[in-house]
Amino acid sequence: MRETQLAVAVVGAGVVGSCIALALQKRGAAVTLIDRDEPGRGCSYGNSGAISPGSLAPLAMPGILSSVPGMLLDEESPLHLPMRYLPTALPWLLRFVASAQPSRVALSAAKLAALHAGAVDRHAQLARELGVPELFVRRGHLHLYPDARALAKDAGTWRMRRYYGYQFQQLDRAGILALEPRVGERYQVGVFMADHATIVNPFRYVQAMVRGFARRGGQQRRDEVQAMTPLADGRWQLRTAAKADAAANTFDRVVVAAGAWARRLLDPLGVRLALESQRGYHVQFDGGRDTVSRTVILADRKVFVTPMEDGLRVGGTVEFGGLASPPEPRRAAILERIARETFGGLEALSSTQWMGHRPCMPDSVPVIGPAAGRPGLWLAVGHGHLGLTDSINTAQRIADGMLAARPG
Image: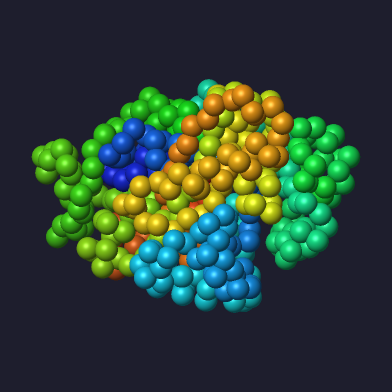
């Protein structure tokens, strides 16, 4: 007799939640993917498209405490904390600074390395499977520095990458121009990671995932989950804005992949995560895609420059400001000015601005797996800057853990 399908709700249809829904559906679960917005329309919509398994160094590195005054006082700092938000952010910041101890940095890097493993090849395979192979571009990532002194400031990060087996090549100015001839004079030293890749339309990639999920029988609902309640029989009941009937909102398992909004669902259940929104911005030029041919990182300014399907995207900055405050136009304006200063040919192009909420943990390591003390509740939260990179491996961890743990 065939075993009854496990009914699973995945809350959050960004790249992580959509990957989880697809993975669970492939393994035989009856999955409902729920998001208040169109799939991929949140943080996944505006990311820089980088598949970056070599990003092993957590944001909190030794010496980060010395940068806090700059966060508070320098409007153009890549890591910006408005003074008004300091009281709210302080508990998270204290954990963040504590995470910068060398032993904890090493542990975080080891966890991230394990989560990143094989990401590039798996995204290449998934893009082919979904019928969108053109979205996956494997041309490497080029990191740029003004000079050798600037590169030396990142020596610890590059040692970490070498330790975990990532290959890279240091370039002089001529080597930079051989790869990207439009890079301005500011950048004299480069480091090229040939084995990295880019998704040139993250939104369309997520949409393709959800279409594939639906073709296989998955259910996708546009609704807002407002609360979750554990039932006596071990199942979970959701309360949603659309007020669906109880049967339609009752599931054997629930996966929370709601990004920076996850705490609104988890705090009332006593599931406490040190989760904070690190607001990221991008400017997208209407045209200019050929300005670069691969992901280019202006390392001294923490800016990613990406040739997207529909223009040139310039993304970056980490801003603490919470979920409710409106975007700060100056942050996007900084990115636009940097792009125009660094690359020729953008002068006549118009641009659009975007801001999204990256869900970040103090140690940069996402929380993936069952929620302690809440049977049937699973978490996939806190991926920060690496949600796209780690989406497939996160999905596999959830699917392996949930289905292996199922009794019977």
